[in-house]
Length: 352
Ligand code: GA4
Image (cartoon, rainbow, N blue to C red):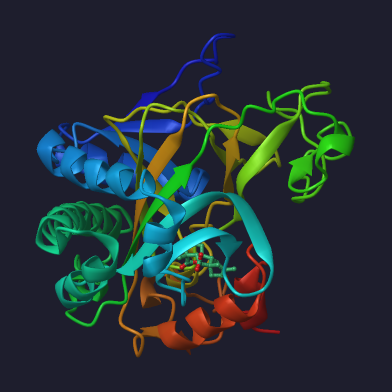
C-alpha cells in the first residue's frame, strides 16, 4: 500500500488516503484493503488491469450523449429513478449542478435503456456492458480479498451477492458542466452555494470555501451533495478533473486528486451493516469548481432485492452485538428513496 505523502500546495493530495497497487502480492493486498475499508471506508486502486479501451469506449459514449441538445437527452428522462436526469437527484427535492444517466447494470436493462439514449443502441449497450462486467469483476476481487482480510472462511460471502443474476447493481455516468462562477457573490445566485466560513460541513444552499475547510472568500458550487452510497461497494472512475471529496472520520473534507488511471472504491451502507459497523460507509460529495467539465462513472455493487442484509457471524460477539436489525436490500433501497440524499438512512435500522 502506498500512502500519499503530505499534500503539496499544488496538488493538495489527500493526506494518508490509501492508494493500493493491485499488482502486489495477494496476502498484502487483503490486509491493506481491509485496513483501508476500516480506517477510511475509501481507497484508490492502481494497476487494476481494466483495459483503457473498455474505459474510453464508455466514456466516449457518455460524452457523446451529454453533448446532444437538451431535447434529445430528455427522451431518456425523467429519471424514475433510471434514465437521464438534470439537476434533480432522487424524488425529495435534492438538487445538484450536474446531468446524469442512471441505469440498472444488467445486459437486458442496458439494451432496453440504450434505445432511448443513443442513435446506435448496440454500440452504446456493448460499451456499457463491457465496462460494467469489468468493474463488477474488480468489485468481486476486492470483496473476496476483504473476506480474506477479515478471516472469514467463506471467501465469496460478499462477492456472491454481486455475482447473482438478480443483483440490483446499477451504473451511473455524471457530467458536471464547467462552473465559471468561482467568485460569484451570494446575491448573484443563492442556489447551491455554500460557505465554509460558517460551517465545515455545509448544506447545499450555503456558501463554501473551495480549498478545504478554511476561511476564504472563494466560493464553490456543489456538484453532488454530501451522502453515503446505500449499496455494498462503489467503483468510481473520473476524468482528470478534480471535485471529489471524502469526509474524514475527524470531520474534515479531503479532496481526492483526480487520476483517470485509478479507480476510487467506496464502502456503502449495506457493507457497513454486513460488517456490523467494522467498516463505515464513507460520506462524500463532488464540488463543481473547475473550468473544465468533469465526468465520472460509478458502478454501484448491490445484492438482489430479496437478499437479507445481516452482519456476518464472525463480526458479532457479546462485546460486539448486532448493531442493526436484519433487513432486505429492497427494504433498504425503498427507505433510501423515501429520504433525502444527506440523510443517515442506516440509523433507522439500528437496534435499540
Ligand atoms: C446515492 C448513490 C447512487 O448515485 C444512487 C443515488 C440515488 C439517485 O440518485 O437516484 C439516491 C441516492 C443515491 C441516495 C438517496 C436517494 C437515492 C438519490 C436519493 C435522494 C443511484 C443510489 O443508489 O443512492
